[in-house]
Length: 262
Image 1 (cartoon, rainbow, N blue to C red):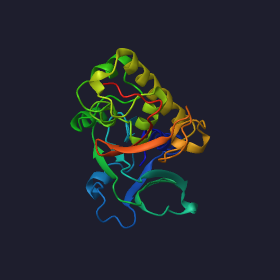
Image 2 (image 1 turned 135 degrees about the vertical axis):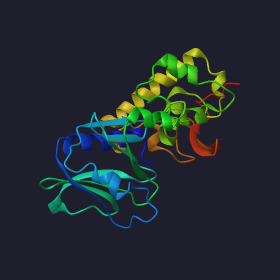
Image 3 (image 1 turned 90 degrees about the horizontal axis):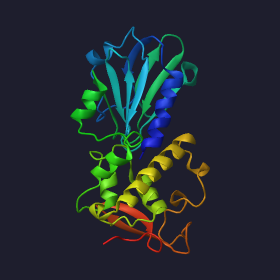
Image 4 (image 1 turned 45 degrees about the vertical axis):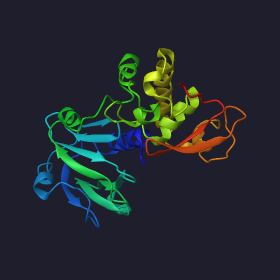
């Protein structure tokens, strides 16, 4: 599933290749049955205008202009954004295609059809309507600490998009692995120092993954991302990677160096 670093990579693609170009039209792609897309009337209002801004909030991309409207893209389980020239042909599984004057195109590609696109007038209003918390790369340490309360597991708290928006399963596990905190630890039992460590860790991790355009092979070898399999050797100690469900999500961790606070 695309997480914040992948979505940031897609946003950068749009910013680099699709802004400040006059939109000739926006059309549905292939096999759009069961895909949530705007209707023709909503898409027509973009014609003759330009996308001049992009914005990412958590796993959501907004592309539009200061006066609106905006396209709001959510990648679902397998979505991505491609920016290309017409001679290359539309990518497979293209569900929506934006044609710019000239040869440039932008496509929303979604093989599994869990993603969606909506037209919104204001990103901030839409973020509030969806009940999303602060973006994971914008929340400060104090704000994060305040949101990590309650009796639920810290893994579940990190995944709660109403608390912090943008941390998914992979990078929640990586954050806990690198800070030595067991995923089952109750969020409310964490010390002030542990909450500060978590905030620093997920910020550093998400930025590092974004900096390599989410190419996991370019990440440091000791990271959990390279050993997400039960029985694999831990990259930080002599322990072994284990797996269990936490809050309904499969979690990978090392019980030897990830302590459970009780």
